[in-house]
Length: 233
Image 1 (cartoon, helix red, strand yellow):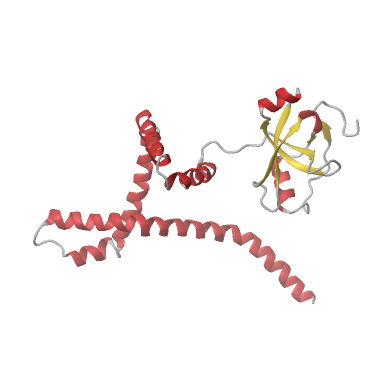
Image 2: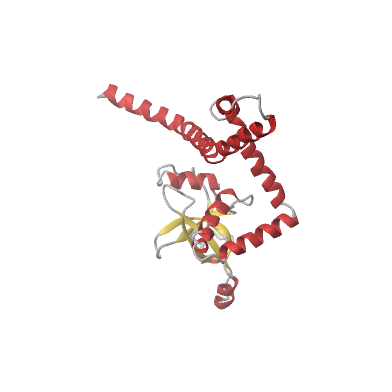
C-alpha cells in the first residue's frame, strides 16, 4: 500500500508539473496545423501557379513545384505569409481609414439576417480573449452572497451602475464572485460599498483559493471594512 501511495503521489506531482507545458505545446501545434491547412496550403498553391505562369515552358514541372511548395520544405512559406498577412491587417486596422472601413464591414454583417445572429457573440468571445485591455481586479473583498450569513470571496472590478447608486443614494461596487475551479467565470453583483469587507490578500492568493475550492487558504491576514473599522466593529 505504501508503494502504491508513493507512486500515485509522485505521478500526480509529475503530471501537475508537465501538464501545463504539454497543453501549451498542443495548442501551438493545433494553431499551426489550423493555419497551415486552412490558409497556408492555399497560399502555397497560389505560389505554385504563379511560378508556373512566370517561368513559362521549360521550367520546373508542376509536380516538382508541388513537392517543393506543398509537401516539401517550401510548405512553411504559406504559414509565414499567413502570419505576415494577419500582422499587416492589424497595422491597417490601427489606422483611421482601416478602422472606418472595418466598422462599415461590421455594419454590413449586422444587416445580414443569418450572420447578425452569430457574429456578435463570437466577437464578444474573441474580444475578451484577445483584447489589449485586460479585465483587471482592484482588490479582494468578502461579501454576503448568495444570502445573509453566507460569505463569498469577491473580486472588485469597478464601481456600480450610476442609476442604481442614484436610486439607493449609496455608493456601490461591481464585484465578480468567482466559481471553482475556473475563477474567471462567475456572477457579477453590485454591492453597497459599506457592506463589503476588504481582505488583505492578493488577487493571486484569491485565485488559488478559488481554484483549489478552499483547500489552499492564504496565510493569516487582517481584514478591515472599507470605512476603516475592524471586522467586528
